[in-house]
View 1: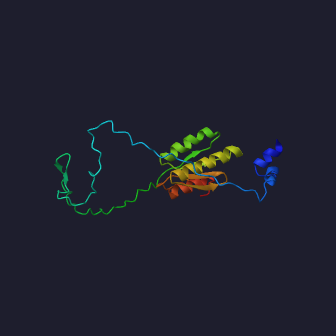
View 2: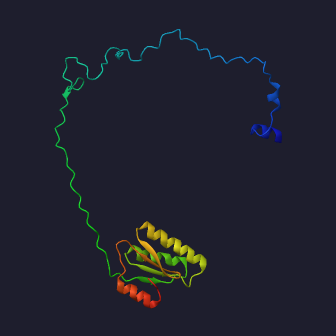
View 3: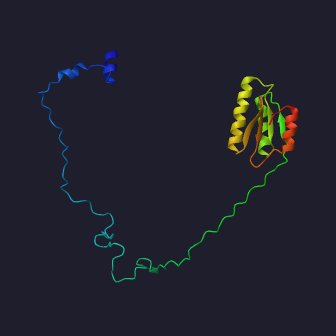
Amino acid sequence: MWRRAMVYLGLGDDAEYDEYGRDDVVEPERPPVRERPSHRPPASAYPDEPSGIGSVRPIGTSSGHDPREVADLGQTVAPAPAVAPVRPRPQVVRPMAVMPNAKPFVVMPTSFNQAQDVADRYKGSQPVIMNLQGADRDLSRRLIDFASGLCYGLGGQMERVANQVYLLTPTNVEVSPEERRRLHERGYDT
């Protein structure tokens, strides 16, 4: 059985393959013989139905009729009204206001459940300082991954301000120089 599996997968020699000689005559396959219908196609179940032969003409041929007329409905199709070209209006790009006086929210997470607090504050356009100095290594790694994904997904930025301390800044929010000075006094170098 092992040998048959090897042969099936193409990994071994097939003994039957060697039995064929080069002089053996191989008969070509013949196409299947089809019977020709000797009877006429069945008559239509609806004898009053027109056969359709000769009643079809290509669109656009001249037949003496107005091409806007619909023969069966007796209605005419009105030509499309001329439309003036539409000019696109110039779009005005207005810069979004930057919030320079945003005070950062400081969090020292002890479990991953506090990541929701970080995200809620961040989505509310408030900068977040995430102090991971007291967190264990695995929690710290998970929170950094979460915070970097949060910042990337919402278009903000994440910067390291000290050892195991990160500042998450949302889009269009700027931490004022005064706040950066306060962070520096606390021991966070920005």
